[in-house]
Image: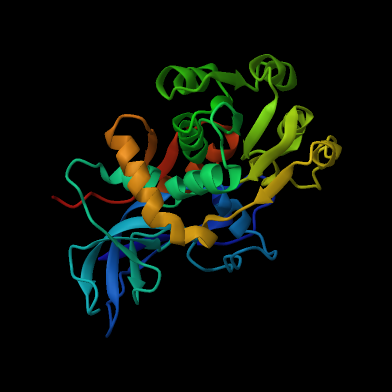
Length: 338
């Protein structure tokens, strides 16, 4: 078996380029005592990957040059000499941009496969994406029925779930996205009350129109000028749930902070950043609720699948140019038979 993989070759400057990585092919490793070999099926592409490539302090150590690029995968155990795993087990873990991964079981979770649930749903809903949306809206946003929730990057994996969770809890939800098609998806299929195309509309003026009673909760994925417009309209005791700042990840110079930051003081509001790795304890409750809402038809998702590990570097840029919709994943290998 040949293990094909992408290794980080250089820390990117500006948008990620294929030349920042090295494609390598080598024999798949053999598991030793208390080890297992996983064949990866799907790789999650996430904006956080851009930060992992920078040699700066963060919540996780940067990926070292020459190492396999970090990424969360869903895979199947091919061989096992580990007492807790057997061949055929479906597992999730941070196993990287590669076809095969050797593991000692640390950080791996065994997934119970349900015939009615597509494997892609494990990447789009039942995992770090769903948990991020759930914790961000409910634990940090603390929504109350009748409040107004604004979601930026609302047609993305996390944003699309966050808006729907807000609707389930009685909020008026306004999404901001980058195309008319995405805006139609948010309102016609996901039940958002309104959607703003930031490429063709004045965001502040549109927010004034769609949020006549101000903004109580902001699920923030973008930052920059978009956050600035939202801060202009926040209500007293508003909650800004800081999930991401994707507008800044490819910046090659310092990005100015929000000019309306004074409103956080004047409105006695709260900005709280959060990282999903701090909230794994909430996963059982989150997965139970997400599964129930999905079964009831109250929650929908979309998966954007890129075929082939070889296309991963080019696919990653789709997160930053806005060309993806829903959860972006790379299909590395064939799904195992049920």
